[in-house]
Image (cartoon, rainbow, N blue to C red; front, side):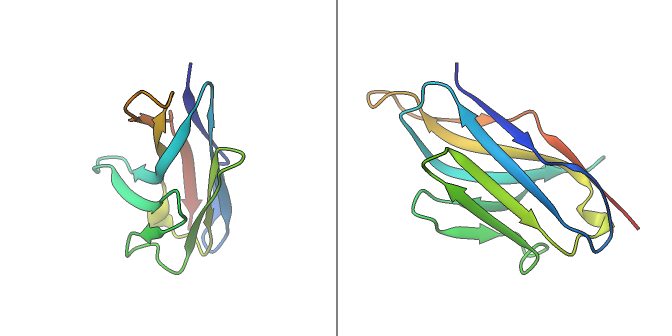
Length: 121
């Protein structure tokens, strides 16, 4: 069974840093674009950052210059380095990965269960 799991969340003071990791495991043929989303209480889930297989990245305007997304294709992992954190970054952070299980199957998006990030003022 293929699954995606996030780790690295926690409580940090404003101005601090956290590094989130997203790991895919199981029988995987390939992983395409991977993205981080977040959802704060009472708000819609929003895109934070994404990275393609080739390493092209995109970021939400609210995190540009503070967050960095990167991937290790050999390890099937994607990281999100978060610096200069603000209280408004508080949310549950989710990883979404486009996964193909075999070379004959069409890929699909898999979501992780999420990891809580809390930034105190």
